[in-house]
Every structure is written in C-alpha cells, then in structure tokens.
Image (tube, rainbow, N blue to C red):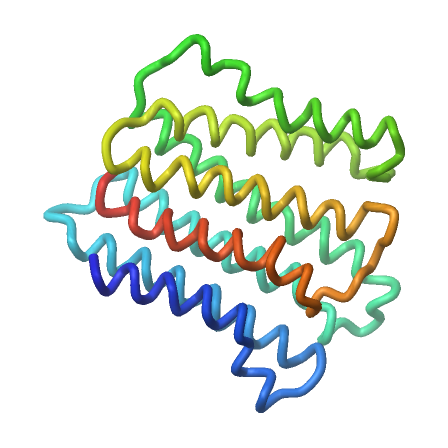
Length: 229
C-alpha cells in the first residue's frame, strides 16, 4: 500500500508543482506535465492491484477506468497540438468528456457491486443536476448546446457519491472522499469553462487548487481502493 500511496501522491505533486514546465515552457509544458501526472495514478492503480491475491472484475474495471481517465486528460489538454485551437478546442472538450464518462460508469458499477442499498441516500444523485440546473437558469453557468449531456454527467457524479456512501469499511473511507473530490473538481471545471469569466487561465493558482488538486487526489484515493474492492 505504501507504493500505491506514494505513486498517487506523485501524481498530485506532478500536477501541482509542474516540474515539466521548467523544461518545456508554455502550454506544451502543462500538456506534458498533465500526461505524466495521469500516468502516475495509472501506475498507482497497478500497484494496488499487485497487492491482491487475484484480480477480480471490480479491480480490473477500476484499472480500465484509470486508462480511460488518462485518455480523457490527454484529449482535454490537447490544445497545444491542435491545428486550429479556436476551431477545434470545443470538439476536443466534447470528445475528451466521453472517456471520463465511461470511467465513472465503471467506477459506479464497481461501487454498486460492493455496497448495500440504503433508501434514504437516494437523494444524493439528484443534488448535482439540481444545482447545475439552478445555476444554468440563473445564467451563472451557460452550458449552451452541452446542457443536456452535462446534466446527465452531473447525475452520474451524484450517483457515484450515492454508491460510495453505500459501501462499508475501508472502501467507504477511500471511495466516498474520491467521489466528493471528483464532484468538486468537475463543478469547478464547469465554472471555469461555462461561468461568467470563461476561458480563464488553466495554469493559474485558482484552477490548480480547485480543479487539478481535487481531481488527482481523488484518483489517488481510487488507486488505493483497488486493493479493497
């Protein structure tokens, strides 16, 4: 478990300290640094799986989820290598969201298989969609044509928190903080992308602490969870 934790924290440090940007300047440095950071949580997941006596479908699904999330990270940060960023950025964002959605579907399936149904927790899945819809109505968020898909994504994030809350023991202590951190990171990302001040600097301090830090910390928690599903 020590190796899993160390690799997960390396991903967090990689994205927060951005050592790659000391070699590669500008957007390309952020792009490369994000790829390296994502590779660390994939390796952390593998290290967690190595502690198991056998690889069950739940652990394999989480590992596949890490790979999908890494792909999503690459697609969402691909702007520096786009032929026409102004034209292709929106397309890259939409395509990049698909692997994240599939990764969370896998996470949800795993957590549902490990938890017991708790009826009163059924309110959790609708909290985020209701919040996003209210912010959209007040024009705090302007989702445009992506409104429907993003509300479905919010429902998925809420369902992930619901499923995590229904697990027990060490798995709950790992999965529930991870699910909440995923929700925080994506909500902050949507505020950056669709809020009043769109297209804010993605390498700034606010973006790093509100989006990058909770996201990579969540993946570190999920990597540790691989050993307990």
